[in-house]
Image 1 (spheres, rainbow, N blue to C red):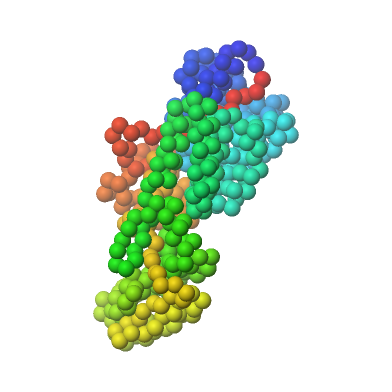
Image 2: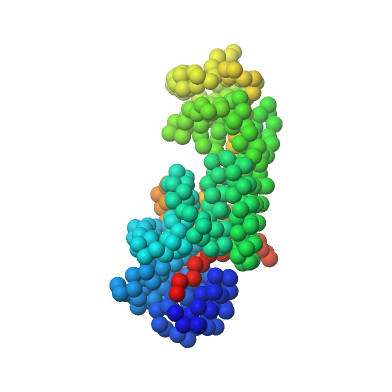
Length: 406
């Protein structure tokens, strides 16, 4: 590898894409094209970056499989950052296998990290954790080590393991400081703020209170009977009764929990569970059936008793009941939650992450766009959605780079 390629690779590793372009902007050999592609990705021109990397991969061809595999890993990273979550994972796995066979441990580890980050984005925590455990952090550059630790932080936060999340974030901060890349350090700061931002709210005894993640963890590990509106389940300690597929039962459970220590009137329960404005005898009969089903589901942790005008929830082994709900419960809140990361998402990527149809997601985006809560740019398959950026607060791009080895 010549001196200009080496210098450009070092510039990229230090987070200086313009410095890299100054050295290779006029060159069209495969190595220069690859570095130019990564530089353009760091500058946010993903379309140009993908085009350059594809040209580089074709230039390397089958005679230089390791260099070609590095281009594929870089393409995968661009797809991840641009939220193209449907990018073929098999191509990344094949590239990683080639890098491992050629003993390119840093780039192979980086490929594993990308796969773990993809799984985290779409909510497959077990898969993300499994992939992360296959990485030896010793082989990672400081920038990639910071990214690795942030994925570990994200997994711990979503599992509500807050002490491990703080430990992983501290490791990420040390690695980011060693990398000396401002955008990377800003990304760590953003994640640190997430740990200090209210993540949910609790409704108990008629009062509402915002909770930090560590407070949510404490609530869910306590003896309190929790009606979890974030996951549509009823839980106490380690016992969980999932009701995500039984929306009527969950609506009844929540109404009863919000009315505790008193009872909920039949009219309230009918309105919450069946949206019935004018209840008749058929509605009341159905309510009795659904209450019986809910009573059977909750038997290990609570009882439901009839009152003069409705029903009341009585927990076993505790005198506390609380409803755990998202910080806000507006329409299309799940879509807004994903867009809150500041990145640009395609509707297909949101559908994949939410486990919904693309048409359902598109309808939500159209409604949110009409009220100014989201904005779109691009056309066709290049169309992306994001929340309007706050004035003076630029979106940070994290794209750690492992320069090609000589």
